[in-house]
Length: 204
Image (cartoon, rainbow, N blue to C red; front, side, top):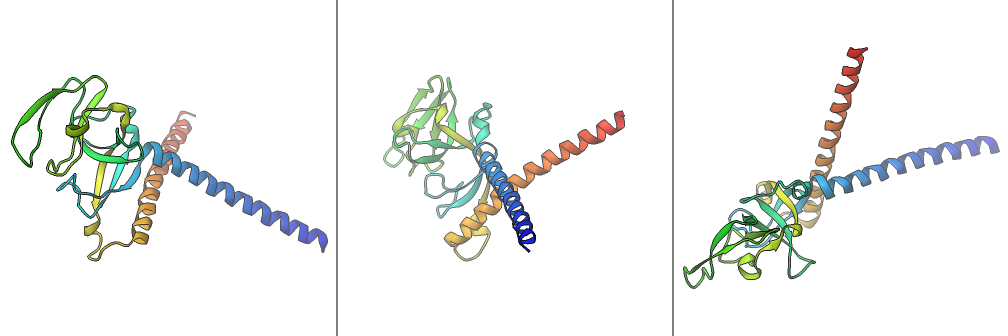
């Protein structure tokens, strides 16, 4: 009886370890995906009206874009605030290094404009709602290295349900979107492996 119980314990322990390793691998892959490939972000605030809803939208961002120079004028990006590193801003790129940017200095009080040349290694960012946006017009051009990621897809939360989303619903939606990003990446890898194995079999 002692041997049987020990064997059962060993079997259960192995199954538990296997599942733990599987969960750990998934979490690691989730972290890598979120950091480099696809990251869902909840947004809020008036600075990007009417592009982004005041009550908040769910956007998908691509962090790897900044590493491959895939950010350009007109793109919406997430930028680490040059004045408060704990804060991340969502703005639109209005000019890259060397570009001349003309902007309205104080749109609430006058139409006076000013033109600046974006320094090397910097970008000029502004909110779509120039009447209520704290951006490069206040703190100047920001270093390209402060760009965290580029927005490539947006979901209006108001279109998902007629009633306001609760925090729990938003969290679940965040997890679902993140999982879809992971699954899509897994499908691409599986497809590549399948094509490779098929090609190798044909060559044999």
